[in-house]
Image (cartoon, rainbow, N blue to C red; front, side, top):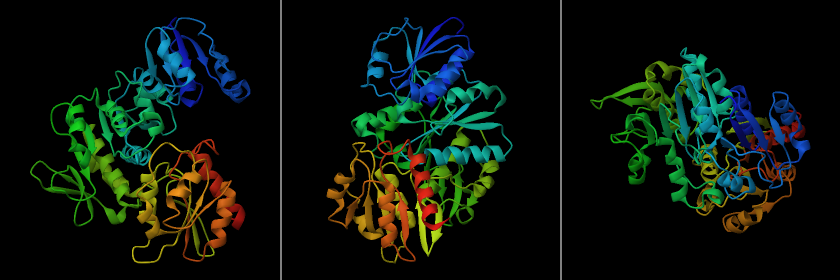
Length: 457
């Protein structure tokens, strides 16, 4: 890339990593971002120190040169000013994920889906590392691929979380193994329809070498639209029950199992020994083992290490138990399906509703209809925050009492006032966070801090 002119659009984490990588390979790099210069000062100073030009507060002016390559950050919507610029510049336009892949020196195992991506990536990374492989986790999980590939020559494999936003701008991205965990409504403010959302997700498989290197939940493996997007042959499927056909299943004896070619189930790990909770997390574990298998790694060697894995913060994380009241941070639940999963895990099957739910945030255009029965069964009170709180209140008030609050602090105070011993105060918003917080982690950390202040935890 020496001497090539590279234009990077967006100076978030992905744009920063892409600019660094391009500069490392000798390119002349300019970054455009519409954010105020003060907000970008630290990143700008870092990049300028290595010879990258940063233009903050971009106001629509033409780029300073005709780029040989433009790299688009995943957070930039196609309809935004920078997105429109990307569509008009000469030369190729690719995303940060694609750019990182082109400089990667080791195989990639990639994971996408609406929910469970981070848990699956972290679990597979944990098992590979414990089994002695040189590996790292990257992508949408937090470390941009463009940063991770700088040491990829030292690794056996990279485990990469891939979002639908990243898949919009891939061209040659070719993981050794790829998994699609599930698909439920999400990001419809950007992808418009479920058909478009599915089509974007299926871009993950465009350059998978054979169907045996694709991993799908059993229902997706039977979907004609999915099958049409794969190479000929049968993908590896997984199922939370033994459906008699899937390659990775939970058996009747509650074991994670692999189905051999003769149909016999090989036990890999006991469900009772796992620290993961909920059927969805069992599916995540099965997907991780199936993806390892698809990449040529021995699932039997990896599976024993699954029992020592625990999910990270902001995913059904108990932050305190005070006066018999349990406080749970599930801030990573950013869509209705994730919210439902949290309620199902925390509900008492035969007991009365005991969950005080804090929900709401950015409206992503998805439907919350159909949750009423789950709310009646599991929840004794709803405390709504964020820009979509009025919409949720109108939708759910027929199922139970919903109260609206201007801040997370006010919602938590109201929930504590109503809670009694045995109750769960649950932050599981079902929405994105950027109306009130930087991201879901900031929201979850704020909840944790507020609980700590209330009870001195």
